[in-house]
Image (cartoon, rainbow, N blue to C red; front, side, top):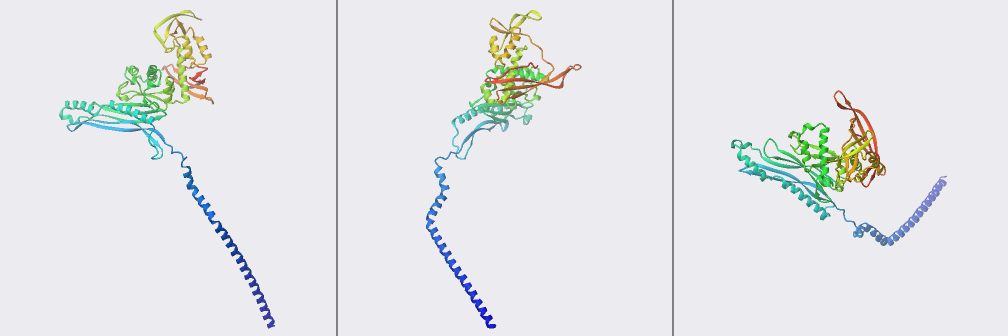
Length: 488
């Protein structure tokens, strides 16, 4: 049994060894095949390597080569030049025997060209823009030349200094003038610079002033209010009356000199600034009011005087369409008042005419119509048609001719008569509604009502607001109204 078991163990061991040998042989064959395949693949890769390296090298170089290929067509860096207002300063003094008697410290505006572009790529600015800068500098420096120099102030001070008792000369005040740049505004072609100034020539205090510079970037010129209209005298007179009437309407007349209205009307040019909501008129110290009032200012909304603007004024102020529509409304309102007794008349040229109505026949005095460009009834009709529809004009003239307007020897005259105002109107404000096409719309007039307190004889607000719609169309000359109410 032992021998059989041993044999069996040997037999089993031999079979196991045979199996292991077979496995080893199979693995060896498989390994040989793998090695043979890898070698073949390596050989193939080695054979293809030069072509792959060439293609890869070309691909690697492509990003670097692209700019070189496009270098001839690459766009130049964008360069933009713009204007910017800067400040320069000039200081000086005058002294005598070691005593400083006068000083000047003056800021003045200059216009510079600023390049918005890559550094080193700007080059020289456009010649036409440089010419504008030079023109601004010339005008700004011209203003500086109008100021008293330290030498001129010093000579005046020295005269007073020598007349002062030597015991009190140590207290002698220094004469001076200084200017300082205030608000600067640039909008489209308009540049506005406000300059504050003060001058002391002895006395209790110095005298302050405000100077407004207005510059047109398109023309390269400084301009005044009178340059923005084709009717400078009419605009000047209108501004004066607007300010004067406003003072009386607000009950402020006691805050000004007794003859303040004469001083306002007598001004040759108005010192104005153009803000977001209107034009501000500035007066000097002591011009229309006591020193304590400072420099009186009055702001007039753009819509109230927009009708006076010429093409240059419209370009520089660049008013919104709604504001221009309201300007046309105020123009139409003035024309409408001609029918209510406020026509411009020459009181030195009168005629007598006969009127027949429900009350009988009677004589009526007529005065020559005094408005530039309107000499006849046909001229009047043409002017009315600039703001009212033909139907509305004919209806209005039929109602008032010849009672209100008539011709004598081919010349237009108007009756010196009118109606009173509606005292129940406290104030009116307006809203402009444009249609989608912006070729028309309506103005909503909000009429705030008031009543009269019979005990105090003063008006008081009732809180009632009536609203009236005033339709219009827009043409080449602005708004034309198809209906127009008499509100006041």
